[in-house]
Image (tube, rainbow, N blue to C red; front, side, top):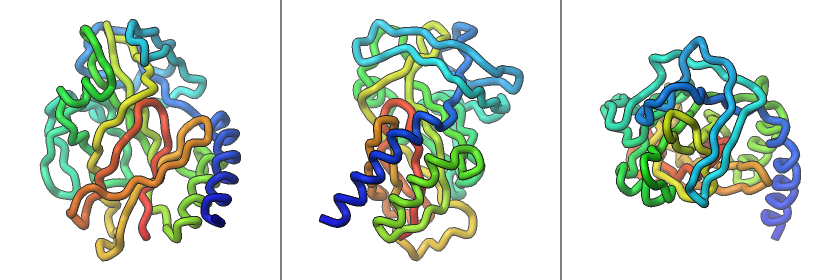
Length: 232
């Protein structure tokens, strides 16, 4: 019962903190639906609405700039904890605190899970976050980790959406599997999970779905969320 109360309190704090947290900006220019990457010269944009009933348009208030080299096409090889893995979803894999990331769900299954139609292509953006960038959101993350007896070793902002005619489409339902290499020096004798916090105060504990001690695989929900890789 105490744990439930703690999580309810965290949810209330998170609902406010996520509103204050910075969001990612995605370029709406161009027509390439295979690569949602943001170039190093892009700083702001607005997003389009989709014909998909589960989608909605989105825009950002705090631009984030990424190098073009961080963009990955669908089926591109990515090194995750020293092993080459093909990611099924194109996107910007900009997180530097972990040893690689790749979407493990097949492209066909991703499209079905996210309810994509027509020429909509799944897209993902992943980047590091911390107390300096988003103090209130990370305060909630750390409290959630403490509630389960864990310690945060890396924190990521992940936006899972789609592109249609070169424009970003925000999604609100569905999920995909993501394998993430633990940070260098992480204690591989410990058990790892991911804590997901989303706008509105939803907190989810995501257990590791693989048996590799150097990685953690978890479900990423559609939309924007903060995910903390946590050692227990």
